[in-house]
Image (cartoon, rainbow, N blue to C red; front, side, top):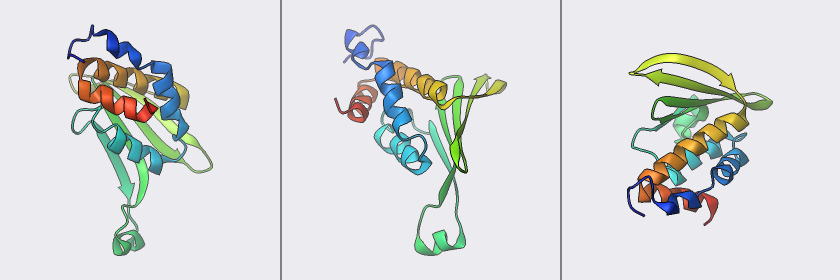
Length: 141
């Protein structure tokens, strides 16, 4: 695939399929953090995914990474945030920034959050062969 956004192979990655794959593990933030930082790490620019964790003394002594407290995915001028909520679906937010200034922050559904992330990842895939391959791995293509 070329780096051209007009490359027809970019359309091979159906946004609905990507969103469905992303929603599959969203209730388990530990697994989701692994997917975003591991499988999709190549699809996003360096530093695009931040995972905040809370580490207890037991976690530190055992060498465990701790519990995920927030995931942020930075895509162009949008930052997508997920936070765990005990016994419920994670809290999802879409934050819009222009020039580093937050102009809107709104809570949304996990479905809309996943769709927004999928659209951003598809845009990355249209710009980068490496990103397209990472998304194809996520979808099992």
